[in-house]
Image (tube, rainbow, N blue to C red; front, top):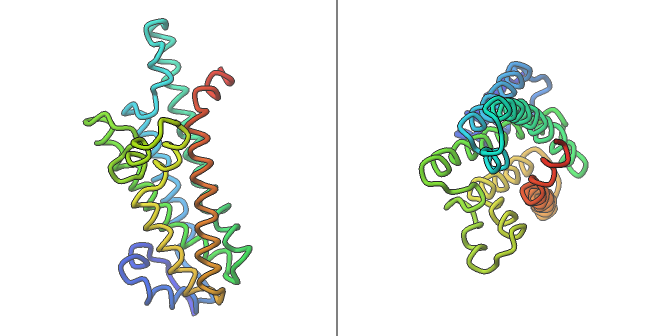
Length: 223
């Protein structure tokens, strides 16, 4: 059986298309979607950087820089965000899929297809940060769609706020979606799937909070 991958239909008609994906012996349209998602990821990261998201470290000492130096740093920042977008794309599709492949008897290629939809949701989440940051001056980690706001009421520790700020409604939907997909594609017990998915996301949230906490230090190290 040959299955032509349709990402949107995997959202709106999930059970039907997961059945077809599970039964498929050959997959079509995978490479086209990979290149499309790569371009979409790079455009999203470069666009948000162009709008000034995440440029606090550069703007902090803007008065000490000449116009040329400032524009040069902005250019390097855009290049850096594009490189980060590429790493984000590779990690989310291939490393995360590899982790799930380790404890589920599922084709690695089919796991990548599931992760393609996860990537779409995460890009959508980043886009929602734009109006919040540009028009309301709200950083991503205190988005009303995340738990960072609640954490800020109980602690002033930045890394804790970053950690809970990484946990959003989008992330909870992703966990639910991954569990549903893995439950249909794998014979692994649902309890183990929940454990593996939540454990992996805890690692990702911890990594995100660490990057957010140490971003200034990393910036100064590579200058």
